[in-house]
Image: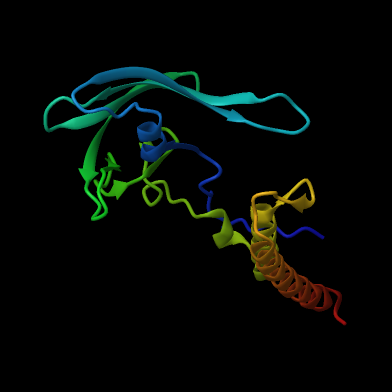
Length: 194
């Protein structure tokens, strides 16, 4: 029997995500310059070739004090939208520069904006993280997979991982897996009435 909650929120994985860190890493946010570009999102699947789920054109303007990025995209193949998003900068104590979007609706600083009709912060889009909607046993099994992924490649220890680190991570993985399996057994007992 499959349970479905009708009051579930959409998650951050359901919408397109625009990242200030990704734009900075790929040198689109450069001081004293105007950079035009195109972004596209693809859905990857093992069974099918990558499929484009969304795209947009942008112009990043970093002249003067007012830094902003303007997005140009088509919403649901009907409506053309031009959205201007201010960008602010902070200076961490360890040096460097970190860029933030200001949400067009509420004005909060955010590293990510999520695209529905407009690109807004997580709170304005009323989104939750996927792990917030998982049960205890699902979270435990996800943590187990996370630790395994850090040290395993194709079922074998990654060559650059020390043996002591490998053993520590695998112990943690087994611990979380056992917690998840015990919790799953309790849920199944409750459902079957035993």
